[in-house]
Image 1 (cartoon, rainbow, N blue to C red):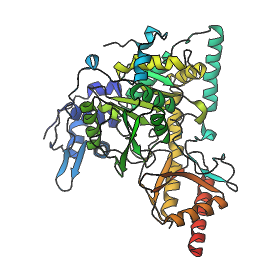
Image 2 (tube, rainbow, N blue to C red):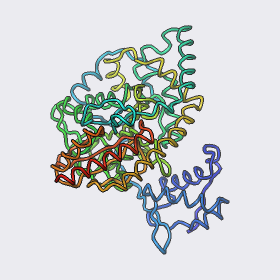
Image 3 (cartoon, rainbow, N blue to C red):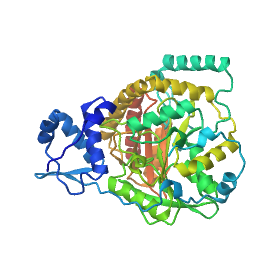
Image 4 (cartoon, helix red, strand yellow):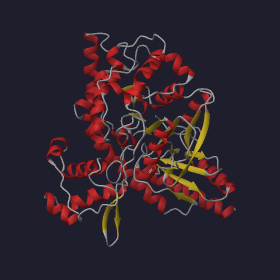
Length: 501
């Protein structure tokens, strides 16, 4: 078929031909200009039509195929696989939300909040360490493959310190600039909104964005607001243990959602809240395919439920472009609450995260947060981070860290492939850890873990309700030597187990 894409609007928004063509094709799919079953022109034809190199066109088609928008059929061509979902839900302004009893009470309280913070125009460390979590040291000593630790040796210290200094000076000259704003510093919320639209395809007003003290605060507040005693909440299993704690603390009923190699398996749950990590399932790293994403959105529409999309470290993609967010697909119904954190992209101890709220939840969330923080914390860090982002330093920092983490990822992945240990490593191409399922006997795992611990090697372990053992190896904070020595010790430990069994 012949397609005509107006690329002029995209030339103003994107700097590369790849981005222009990718977003033009994706928008044509999302808007129904290209429908399920349509055959796309060949890469050669598209290159000729728009004056791009064939390599650029091929990369765009590969990215769309990886995200489930199109599907190549050997010997036939590339076909549209995306199907527009007809979400039957009331418009934003007319939607009736179901708050918990606690949420209803807090929504009706006269907690002081600034009107400018709520007016709408129109993690954290996801880990459970098996051992003592000791800090990483030299490779000759203990090597801990713990999760959620950033590489501070490569952090942009001078640039960050300059932003901190400038904002400290401004705050001493004029005090209380950002006081009593429970949703956080406005300049940071605006910077996050711009970043999300440019890099994650999420269009949101800065008034919908709240700054939180790490993603766990967002998870806890959202659970309190939306789930009370006896209410059902769905969370992935295996998944982030902090979500489980938040659900049980709210006296809600936890429904453990099954996870396979394609992520969460959609079911007709009778629940009003769902937590999911679609772009990189925690801890397995599985990517939720397009069909399941659409099923989850339809489920939420049918149930009048909310989906909390937790994106904890998938900004670091080692091959290709970042996967489409669930929030970017939620263009009409405002079903998805999107959470992110700077603890992985900046530094572990910065403890700043954010949440993109549906319009109907902005005021309840602001009042809930004001109850705990009438004066927002870390204002200096929030202002410095806004400056860091607005100056382009954050994007430059991300590019540098992506190169560094991709190198470590490749080194560790290739080393693990050479091991003969009974672990099935889950294929992945993003994030700051590699996950695998133990395929041997329980007693062999116990002996292996003990031998590794005695050799000075630790990792994070996850045990599912199916009694399967998952192993997560975090690599972001380790040096090349650490990674090589750690894998060598694991190999020797397994040989010792084999010789004594």
